[in-house]
Image 1 (cartoon, rainbow, N blue to C red):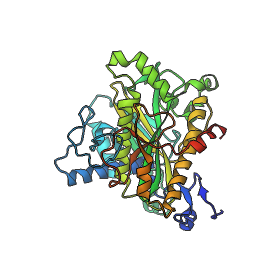
Image 2 (image 1 turned 30 degrees about the horizontal axis):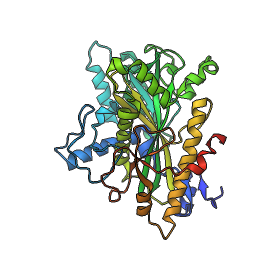
Image 3 (image 1 turned 180 degrees about the vertical axis):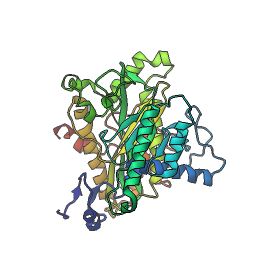
Image 4 (image 1 turned 120 degrees about the horizontal axis):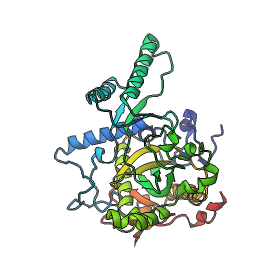
Length: 422
């Protein structure tokens, strides 16, 4: 593998690549230990650790719940697109989750189910920690399902015995509460894929960007045994025999989602107009910021490392926003028109931003702090356009008292015009 590159973007990590990386001279996609954010167990542990540390450091701080107003909080430093940003309670944006690779957590989960007596449990979804595209996922609907799963786990542990350290371990899993009341679009289940860009790690410069909406091909049936009825990603939907006919309707733009909610649900649900580009966007940014705060001290940092992460959110019937997971190597295929409009622009903007930041840090006449100050326009946007990245966090001593919806200067004019050619 060649190591005399300027930019390397590949899905598979190599120890040799990181060993030979020339800091400040090369751009390398994927932070080496991004698993603390982009695997199921990594994200779970990071959020738990952050919440525990926050409670220890600020014992009187109770977090902020979705219905609270975020006022009277110090805003000396601009941390995120929210004017005031307090720690969210994990339970308010992340479904209850148990690790199946830790005995105490396994026992706690199975004891909880046994404690229900004759009542059937609410559904749970079981996911392997390091896979994507819906691979290895299954639902646990009944006590019988859970008993079979428990027996399988115990059998696996017993069979390993003294050879445990000598054999390849099965993929660690989590069991997560299944969201039973998802908001539906024309009767179909959906989630929202947004993007989180770590453009620089020294110092951190991170951005949030709108992506697109992913819908199932079929109408939602909570009792369906077809996994594609519960998972919205394109990998699963392509298995539907009608996919070629309906594929253009399985991915919506954020603008279409906003229009639909304005026309169909805004009045009935008491939502403000443009809820998608207002409260929903701010909530996603707030959650992404908290996830970043949870891992920023853990991530390996070198000038030239960058990462593009896919963030999957679900909205329930009460318009509560849930983070499902964060994914490294987000899908960049363009098999329908909305993806053709969004994905190439995401790639071009990512590279343009990262290249610009590195070039500025190498310029002796302009410090990174000067770059940050020169890049904030002060322009206020009521909506974040499809091709605009919004900064999530900047060095804390640089920008103060900035409007919560200030957006980053568009650095990508030279590449946006070519985005549709990719």
